[in-house]
Length: 236
Image 1: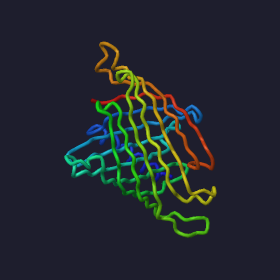
Image 2: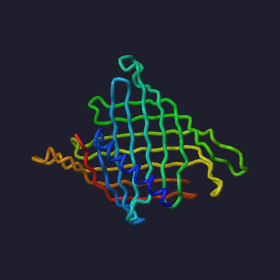
Image 3: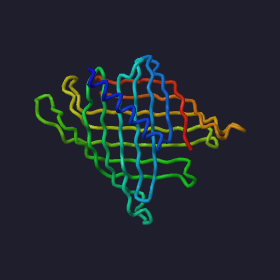
Image 4: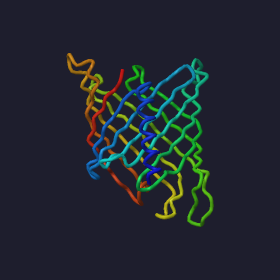
């Protein structure tokens, strides 16, 4: 347990250091059902070769009890061509929990279709990926390392950017023989009201809103909806 706590602390320190360098927003969520606090550090940055995205979730109960992160890289060497809507995608997922121990490491690779409205107020992407999850076995004890994942991501601004609706949806295959399932769905839609639209508050990059974690066969068999009350600061 002490070894696990050191890993969680190290993850948190690395997250803070990275966030100071390139972070884009930090969120604080209150899970209404579990009465716990979750922090999220999130960054998306495009560049000449594609884009980089990551997020790190930390659970507090009230001490740090878990850490989970995903980092993804899109490669699009042909951005000036008519095929710039298509990118190569690689990704890593993993984390730790004081209750469950280490989460399964997952390594993903595939292709991403991206699109946007003319004014960029609405963006979306859809990724189809091969997903390797080492160490997983089906109910018969047979290795099930080879899997797949489909991910959709969106961001939409409404009412002259007063309101933002964003989030993601994942559908993937992963053997969970203890609950008799192997297909998982998860989505986390968010709605934010952006206070920097108030006259004189243009530099106050604070938003208030909510997130609903929708999952099926993720932490247990069946469907679960977990709403949060949230605040977000976006760094310019």
